Image 1 (tube, rainbow, N blue to C red):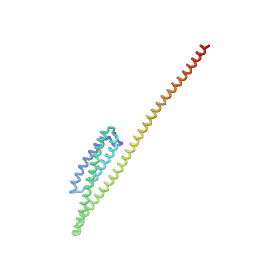
Image 2: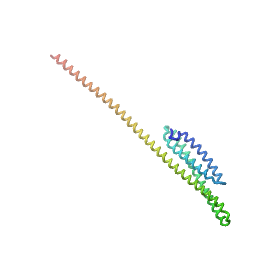
Image 3: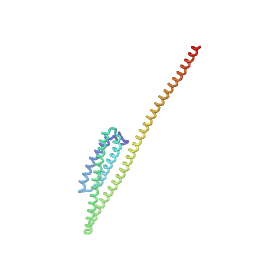
Image 4: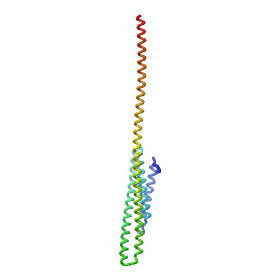
Length: 221
């Protein structure tokens, strides 16, 4: 079982697990760095990895439904759901981090503005916070673009899965029709053979009757 450009269900699952571990480590590092310095590049990288995990989940969701064995299908369904839940949890943690960083920057900027009213030398501090605010805004825009791209990819994969299921249904119907036609042809051939046998019996009976009549007439004479 594989999808074009993706891999087998097992390969996609292993890839998603590796990405989960990497994303969790990066998120923890992001939380530690938040105390001293903001890292918009790392937050964008974490968001990108989460989007990739969600894309893998969409691909796996399309694949586990094709597993023939029901116990295996149920097992893969639980595994994929677990990966999707962990990805959602990481995304929520990242969103909370972004909100905290935004509040921290807003509070720091407000403090700098208050200081600026009493000290005209705080323009440098304000400029630093403006640059951080712009970096955070850029990170949020990048995250939004990634989420939109992920949503588009997920919709495409869902459509692909739906079309594949429709094709499978059409194939099953076609096979049923072919089987029915095959059975009908077999029945027709049996009927034709029976008709030919009946005709031979009829002709043989007519010939036998004619012979009996001729023999009877000769005997009577």
